[in-house]
Amino acid sequence: MIKWFTEHPATVGETYFSHLLRASAFGVRMLIAGIACILHGLFPFLCVTTGSDSMKALHDEMSARRDVALKAQKATSLPIR
Picture 1 (cartoon, rainbow, N blue to C red):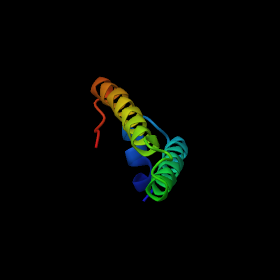
Picture 2: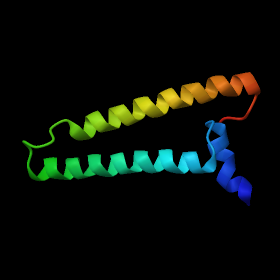
Picture 3: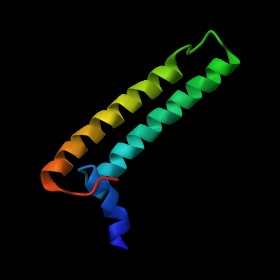
C-alpha cells in the first residue's frame, strides 16, 4: 500500500512529501487562475490574459520537470508513467 504513495513521486524524482508540496503549489496557482477566469467572465476588462498566461506557465514548468525526470530515467532505467 505504501507503494501507492511513493511510486509516482519516484518517477518524477521526488519523495512523497516533496511531491505533495509541489502538487499543492501547482494546485493553488490553478485555483488563483480559475478565480481570475471567473472575474474575467464577470468583468471582461479584468484579468484579460491571466488565466491563459498561468496555464501556459504551469504547462511549461511541468514539461520541463518531466524532461528532467525522463533524462534521469534513461540514466537509471526507472519506469516513467
